[in-house]
Image (cartoon, rainbow, N blue to C red; front, side):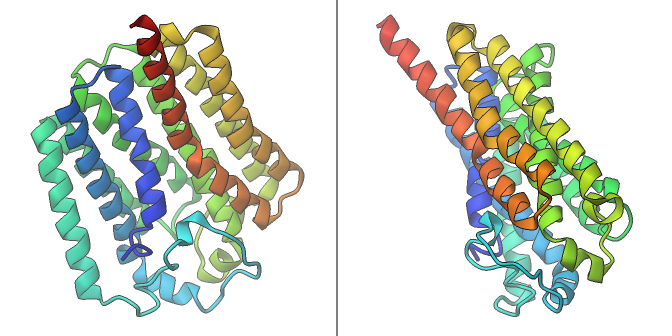
Length: 299
């Protein structure tokens, strides 16, 4: 079940709405923050699992043409596509997705109707993304929107306001990070499999050069948006706080991105994917530590 839900990736993804909550309110009510945590965890586990549930037939074909290299894949912790391998029954898988999805939707509705709608739309975009596997490489744009909407669950759990610049910087930050740090590079590592399956991705259709430029461009946008987000949301952080976030973006995103652009090896694409997957969670930890330190100094 952990592998089916991509448990490591799902748990790390909870950092995204929690960051949204802190951006909206640096002193969020504990009960709403806990409710947000529950809705996000159930929602991400359900959505990641739904990807494997919808793609089960495609994934069965995938195992006939596995990629030539082997290396650590943070998505594969707990087992890669256990449903497609027959390690999990379709009935159990469906019950798991629907059950957790219902829990997530109920908890989100307890926060606000906007949160419930965001969760439902994100799930719908995930289904559309899966349906477009063999249709267009531009489906990567959907993942950027989907991840941004998921992160906004935390924002709207704390405030209904949409006229603050940090919200829009937050959306750009998440969308650009997802496109450059997870989606394209994950497809990059799977090119051998995708060619056999007829799956249309940016690396398959446009090659490594275009994929590399698009990846680095998105990662640069994510790093800059992250710095702007911190600057507008946490003025107490000042220039040092912005510098730390920029340095984090350079290490987790830009350095491995430029390395991949110079050497388009699938192993380097997966290395970028693994490092980038940790980026929002580490950013959240840095911001939280800064806020706690600032409050302690005030006391």
